Amino acid sequence: MNAFINGVTRVIQKAGDLASLLILAIMAVVTYEVVSRYAFNHPTSWAWVINKQIFGVFVLIAGGYTLIHKSHIRIEMLYDRFPPAMKTVIRWLTLLAALLFLGSLLWKSTVMGLEAWETKELNMGVFKLPLYPLKLFMPVATLLFILGCIAAAIKNE
Image (cartoon, rainbow, N blue to C red):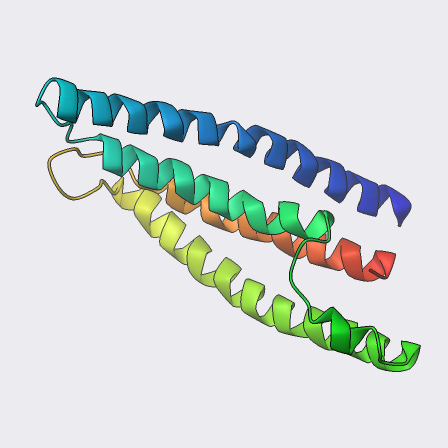
């Protein structure tokens, strides 16, 4: 079990480390857009579209990354007062709720991603950026989050 927990944690950590670099890409695109728009009066047609996709990847990875660093919000002033048995029940109910939500997200995002792949879906508007890579990434990130939830439950956190 420790190999599973450590493996999932390591993969999520690496994905989070790589995703953190996306903030630099977002900053670069925004800076380019601002300079282009205000210094040269020549706004881009692609900056907003690119930033939405980059931020989408960042957000998808952030859920699992936040989970392994125990940074999700819980109401500690109530939770800490519960007896250990009640904390265990709450943890398992929370895991069940997370698995129900993430399981349905995995199912629907997989269907959506495969449809986008088959049609080679493109962004609407002037800049026709492919959407299918992001839509195919959604079930991958969701699966990683599910594995993180299971690893955290096994680890008893």
